[in-house]
Image 1 (cartoon, one colour):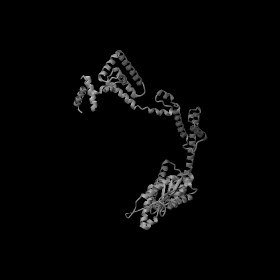
Image 2 (cartoon, one colour; image 1 turned 60 degrees about the horizontal axis):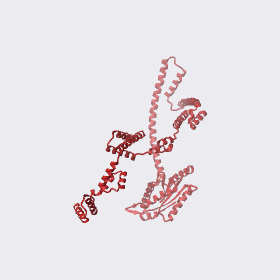
Image 3 (cartoon, helix red, strand yellow; image 1 turned 135 degrees about the horizontal axis):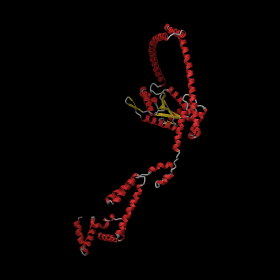
Image 4 (cartoon, one colour; image 1 turned 45 degrees about the horizontal axis):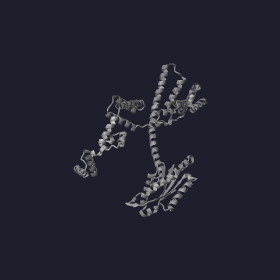
Length: 510
């Protein structure tokens, strides 16, 4: 409906009611017709458009005096303004400004840089008597500060006392930090260094007094502050130096004796050696002659020593040539030995590896399980054994041929490798029977492993010549700590496998 139609309806309404057409009556009738037509007209909203702008006290007074129209609202506000005392209002504003300034100055003294900065801006704005826009912006800044402020950092002090986020002074007073804790830590570190410094570097062991002192330092680092400590540490250092010196002298003496014996043995070896040349014998005679027939002057001694040195140099060159020739032969022999070792390693690996699946064979599995048994007996490290057998494998060979059976065995071996962990051992026990040794594993962990293998096999596509071969596996599990011996463990795992076969196959029994 248009405004013109509402106007016509308003005129008809006034005619029907026989009222005088005053502006107020017309406005009242017009608003009734607009409301009836469902049309919102701003002038008809009365005082509702002004109420959001009022404070709560004024709004309550408007409701109390039952102000309905805009004219009544204007008269009410004029009357309210007439009742105000300008001097009291000015005084109130001044008092509120002083209070705000005092609060801002108090906040500025707190230990939060953001709050301090806002408080200083507030003080400056109050002193400059800023306008409404500036006050609104500052008010928004305070609201933002309150929104993002987070005092959870105080909880870091909870290890040292009770935290009261509403009373920082009380929180500080509640803190209990030992003043000597840092000093004690320093003494402990110094004591550790002293103990390491007193440890023998050459002497085989500590003397009793030094050992006693190091023990006291380990048990009570604060003993460093004791008056008697300086005397004891000096004595300990002196004793350590003396012991090290004695040890060095003993080692030098022993080394000297060893060199003397070695020289005697070397000369004896030269004398008894069939390969000792005439020239070397001549050198030896010259040395003996030099000792028995000492030269009269330096020139003669120098000449004789030079002749001996020249002969030694020549013979050493011949010996070096022989050693190089021998070295070539030694290298050739080393290469032959390396080749033989590689062949031996291959042969050893072949003796431990199943030729078809490349898994460990029964012999190698027995060696591994013996090691696990030794670890169990010595350290109590539990382990589990899982016996796995491919169901109806004979029918695979009979139906598709032995080549297909071999392909299935190799594929199953790969599944076991994929599912096994680094500390598990997988091998072929014989025929279509496989064994997995699960180290450091409880029965439930072994059950989970076996179930993963079973599900993997059931879902796998064993293909041969383009045709899928359906394969399932039965598993029997036993853990070492449930059995009195290794042999009974193997029997137990085999028994669980037997149970799985007789319960319909393609299942895990533990």
